[in-house]
Amino acid sequence: MIEVRNLLVRFGELEALCIPHLDVEPGGRLAVLGTNGCGKSTLLRVLAGLLPPTDGDVRGTPAPGEAILVHQSPYFFRGTARDNVALALRWSGRPVGEADEWLERLGALSFADRAAHVLSAGERRRVALARAFSVQPSLLLLDEPLTGLDPDGRERVIPLLEAFESTLVIAAPSLDGLPLERTIDLSPTR
Amino acid sequence: MGFFWEGLREAARLVVSGDAATYHAVWVSFFCTVVAITAAGVLAIPYGAWLGLFRPRGHRAQVFALRVGMALPTVVVGLIVFGFLSRRGLLGSLDLLYTQAAIIIGQFILAFPLLGTLAHGAAADLDRRVVETAITLGSGKRRALWAVLGEVRVAVVAAYLAAFGRCVTELGIALTVGGNLPMRTRTLPSAATLEVTRGEFGKALAPGILLLVLACGAALVTHRLSREARS
Image (cartoon, rainbow over all chains, first blue to last red):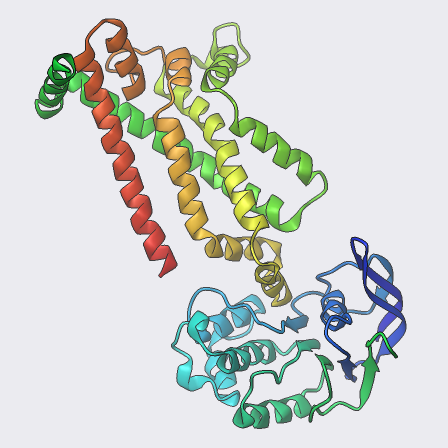
């Protein structure tokens, strides 16, 4: 179980995030909601082990490679969409041949041979999600996963999220059809 | 002006006739520089990128030391290497003084901080998502470092060009630890300097022209590599 206690993250003088208490059960599904700049992405980076907290404790998070963060604006390495998914599979010790299967499930196989850098925002989102799902992490952290997706993309992503069996934390401005029961709102007014 | 043209004519004659001493100096300059910057790059580029990416404890002091090293005068590097390689020095028993190996050691010291600093700058300025994406996908730090070096390859190529330019034109090391021995350790800059002090302007211009050719060649190769890297 992920346990967050008295978490404080500061960037210089700016208090970016303050969470007194948060638990996420194994296999739990949590939506982190809130307005822009309220610290949703910061919380995901902390849970992914990429950002050490200024103060407080975060326990029970899996190691990098087991905890996958998909950024709001995903980054792609040199090469095609397929190369990027294959790279993640190689790093996680999984068969590289599974790349096409995941691209197909996200409706991204038709542009698998195109350079990842030239893809549209929606296409990039599909490839980034294919890359994240392909390594089957024990903690999946998604920053606004539906942004930029067309109806077909949403129809493909939402069932995958519903079927995902490990721990899932999604940051988004609102639930907007996301299959998550539990929410935490980081908006400063709450 | 006539003096200048006369010098140019003499330089052209030496270059066209394939003067053995001049072309040996080209070889020594090119060989020593390429070996030195290759060896320095293998160590300095991952080291600089590692400092920029992971900011380990004491990284500020290490970056400062690299920057100081980048500003070192070549003659000071030459004197330091001389101190180690001279008969009474720590490495005197290796008998490397006044050899091409001595020049390579000096140029390695010259190139290392330059390559390290430029790699550090490229990695530190890189979008944090690059390393975060690699780490979160389970690359581990070493593979993340290689992934990042792949992303900053254009800057790495430019760093090599800067190191090539600094080493191939340096004089202090070549004279101090190379000894300017004809057909052995004479480089293009040391040959040019010697001929000028002898009053042989034409013979001094020939190495100067060949240095320019080397510099243009390196820039051309770098330009092509950068274009390929971008594509």
